[in-house]
Image 1 (tube, rainbow, N blue to C red):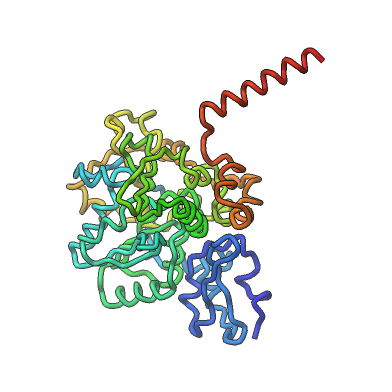
Image 2: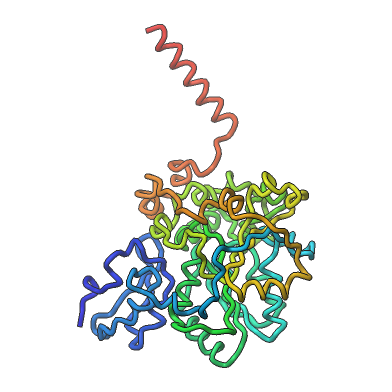
Length: 404
């Protein structure tokens, strides 16, 4: 038996994405996914059960020795260069309720109406985000919209997906690039009935941060029942957070005024692996990639004439191209180019910079009151009066310095 300290999966924990492919693949159930001090789930290996078969290492998509991902797509399946499009849902209600252009809803609805299932991230009643399986179009709104937190992947979900594929069901799996790579690695062979859609990912905050955020509002007597991270009431480009409270009330806040989103935008709260993301590339593991087509109007003003949301759509495989063709009658699709896509979404080619504040952010999250965390990391803009007071103090100090 080998000890957890010497196990291959423990060699570089900062690279672990938490995809849970290793736990799903373990034939002895020796691996469980447990949160670390920052709240991010990592594999924990029982040395009493592990037989050192090496399968966990073989399916780990970030292990440099892993080659299974490359064998899980049929030969010739990849487009040499992704085809790039601007797109949006022709249904205005769905587009309005979606984070950007509502393309995912069309793709998912296509699979569901063929008798397939869709796997994606959804909030539960406790505001925990987990990947779930749906087979009813009425449940599709649960999967819409951005969830700015790492979704919990249960090892049993991968096994369930494999069972559905073995039964011949169509399966759409949607997730971050590392989650899609984790599933493909776990499956270890191509499935013609599997359709994968990855997102342009900025990185993932910890579920622990979201929990502390919820506790903060509960302590103030305004417990949260729902969070819409990408409410477009003020437009797609000026989106904000809509908080729904237990008393039936709701509040819209800009992303600069919301402490959770401020920590995300400053990159203080991301998983360690996100700062060295191995999937920040135009080589994608999804058949299709979707995201916001930020700054599309600089090159293609006709694709952002109404500020209702424009999706970036990358077609990465031959299967993805055929899938898109099936859905074109419900989408606006306009040709674009990869340089414009990368300019608006730099995460397509490089990971986010790790700020110095990341060293202490999660430690402070657990050791100081949330209100103090907000103040220390400036997670809320200062009021006008406070800005005026600071400016006045600086002016007085400058005057005194000149006189001395």
